[in-house]
Length: 163
Image 1 (tube, rainbow, N blue to C red):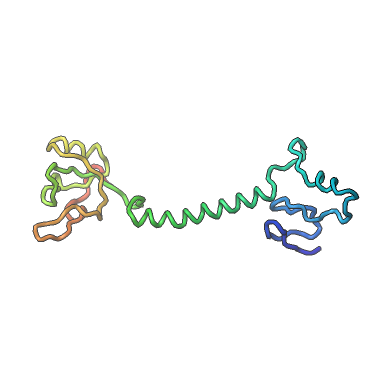
Image 2 (cartoon, rainbow, N blue to C red):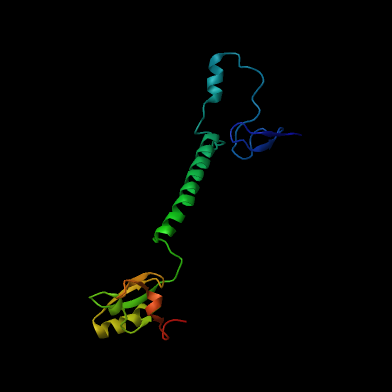
């Protein structure tokens, strides 16, 4: 027994196999040529009513493999772009109460970043502020010297709702 490559999918199969175990491609054709030309056409036609018909024909398997490669390529390219742009983030987010006139000086109402929105909402309601969702390393604003102030620079984690 020898190993050969399937002419359809290119994977290894036994030379004694009648069809490829991966894609179903027939490996051994009848050696004798048909007596009349019309007979060859009738043998090559697919009969959809045949109970032995396999819908996973070699062409369909190859098409599925191509689409799988395209999809995996898109994922490999798209995921890093989404992470870099900040659309997808694995860092935790918190809630802070934001006053209507937003500046780095007015950001700090109670001084806490809340894990729970309801905990933050209680503080926001008391001051007429809005609850916003933030990441600790995001820019909260600038100080009077023009320096960037991040949320984790001017807030501490709420002892009631953060671990």
